[in-house]
Structure formats: C-alpha cells, structure tokens
Length: 524
Image (cartoon, rainbow, N blue to C red):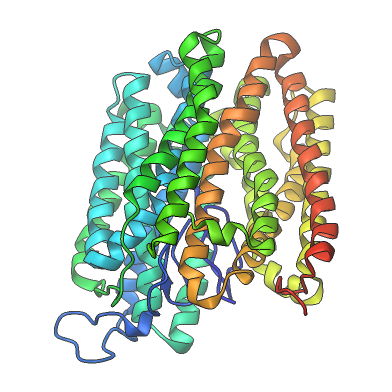
C-alpha cells in the first residue's frame, strides 16, 4: 500500500517519506490529501492535453522542481533548532518564545494541511504549488528580517500556512501526472529527498549560523530560502504540469477554524502561560480547550452526516485500526518534536557546542533515521506491524537512556563522537515508527476514503508535533532552573521513555485485541 508523506522519513523506495513540518501530506493511491476524490489518472489533463494526458506528463526537470519544493518545508522545520542560542541573544527572546517559533509553525501547518490539498484539487495543483512557494519565500524573508521575537513568531505562523499550501500539491501532482514504473521512481525519490532534508536541515543550519554571511547570523537560515524559492518559481512555471481532481471535495472552513482554535488554546497557555506565572487568560484558555475540541468534533459530525467531507471524519476515528494508529502516534510525535527541541538546547547551552558542531553531532541520528525508514517496509513484511512498532520504541528508548547517562556523567567536555552510538539508536527507532504508524492507520481506511484517511493521519501528526514542544518542551524548560540542563533533560526524556514503553505494550497487545494481521487489516 502506498503511504502518504510525513514530516519524518517514511518508507523511501516503495512508500513515501516526509516532513515537520518538518514534515507531511500528499496523497495515497492517487487520491489527493484530505478528499475522497477520483484517482490521479482521472484528473483533469493539462491545457492542450487530450484524454489521459494527465498521465505520465511529468518530466525530469518538473520532478526536480517538485522535489526542490518538497525539501523547503522539511528543512525549515529542523533548521531553526540549531539557531536557538543566536536568536535568543539577538532578539532577547525567552525560552517560551522560542517554543512558539517551533510550535506556531506546526499549528498553522496542521490546521491548514487538508484545506491546502483541497484547494489544489479545486483550483489546480500547479497554481497552488506556485502560490505556496511564493508565499513561502515572502514569509521566509519576513522571518529573516524580523526586528523582534513576536514578529518572528507571526512570520513563522505564516510560513507554516504557506507550507500547508505548497506541500500537499507535490505528491498529488506526482500521482496525477505519472504512472507505472515512472510513478514508483518519483515517489521513491520524494521519500529520499524528504528524509535527507532532515539531516540537511541540521547541517545547513549550523553552517549558515557559523558562517555569519554578511553579518546576517541566524537570519541566513531564512534568507537562503528566497533565491531557492525564486528558482522554484521559475522552473515550476515552465516545467510542472497542471492537474486537478475531477470531483474535488469542498473545504471545511468551520472545522479548520475550530481545530486551529483548539490547538491554540492548548499551545499558548502551555508556553507563554508558564513563563508569565499562569495569569488568568492562560487558565481560561486551558479551560476553553476541551469545549473547543468538543465543538470541533460536533461540527465535523454534522458535516459528515449531511453528506459533506469534514476535515477530520468522525466515522474514521471510530475504526479500531485508525484509533490504534492514532494512539500510537501520540508518543511518537509528541516525543519527536520535544526531543529535537531539548537536544538543541543541551548541545549548545549545556555542552557548549557551537552551531556547526551541534548540527554535525546530530548527523548520525539523521542517517540512521533515513536508513531505517528505507528498511521499514521490508521489515514489516517479515514481522507484523505490532512487533515492528514495539521494536522501534524499545530501540529508541535504549538510545535515550544512553543519552541521559552520557550527559549526566559528563555534563561538560563531552566529545560529539561519544554521543554518536546513542544517537544512532534514537534515529533507528524513529525511522521505523512513522511508516509503521501510517501503515496501521491507512490500512484500516477503506480504499475509497484513502484521501480522508491520509488527511487525518497527517493532521494528527502535525498537531502532536506542535503540542510536543508545548508540553514536554515546557516541562524541560521549567526544570532547568532547579535541576540544571542535564537533570531537566533526564526528567523530560524519562517521561518520553515511559511513553515509548507504553507504545511498545500498546503495539504488541493492541493488534491482538483488534484482530489485525501483519498488514494492519482486520482478520475475519
């Protein structure tokens, strides 16, 4: 089964890997993200084409342009972690504000992801790809020129929204304009680029901050996007074929707004409320969050009952396999985003690594993550999804325990290479988790609703990425003044490890309770 993309790498050769967004949507089986539309070959052909012209019209230069666009949102999710100390010093930003720089991007991305895919279905994927790329360039410029931290947070929110317009068009365009072996190769390249972008984001961030090009410092991590976007627009206008769905699903504006409000009501108090001493507004927002969540569910249920296409279909959430996958996604994505946030602080402010050294230190983790994501599909064919997910959780937990031990025993003067084996374990576990999560969720979704299932899986992923920084990241920052950097990291990672142990237990016993086989489908 073809898998959707994600902010974190998935099955590269045969499936789809991604972003956060880093990370991130596309389509499944030719169905655009978030809709139950007709498959790609039935899509409207490009101008001047006849019947079936939408098939196999994507040429190498057009594919290269789409892949260039795919790398941008993933790189920008991870590149900012390495620049935290420089941003903090230059903009006099609090740690809570830095959390918002990461989480705000993910919230906008999560809330608008499905809407972006549906806009491409309706108005043309090439048009939305170009609009999204242009918006990404403008918002990157706004980030790079930010005079203060709240400007940067607002620009990052807008950048996340631009990514939600840009990214869904890429895999959907590949699915709609290729077929057969050419499609398989294009999807494999898409997965490879998405996975490598995580590693590239860490290295590029360190290189740009350390180089201090023209005195730009951390601003270069955003300003470098502008010429890349200009090239993407130039090539995209000429070489990316157009496609759209013959039966596009309508956008769910009410669900989109309510989801954004729900996430914001959780995110703002957990970040800014803690730093401000829990003022009344933060308490009121936390109280309002479950009511907003209930309102979102009620609206989605009403839209579905009336025959519409909701952002998060409640009927899919009632599927046992989908619920099992969603529960598995909580410790995976909450833990991943908080881990990347915490380790960035520890490497540079705890271990006193420079930006370049910090970026290079994480390369073993990124390489292992990419390699294990490539192997995930073949491993799942030998073992069932429950065993693979449990194995990934235990391997990652072992890596995190090793990080705790190393940082605690040698809080200063720790050579980067000493961390490499522990980071390899972390990356290997993480790389297995996302494609397996997607396999569980999407195999429980009927083929006719593959697009809606993809949108649901992507929205859960991005929402958890945002909340991971706001919860475990906030816990880490709250403990630093009392326990020090290494002690705070130990507590935060032990909480994450507890979640991974729960994930392993859920993966092993949840499949038996729901009767899933190795592919995630229910047995008679």
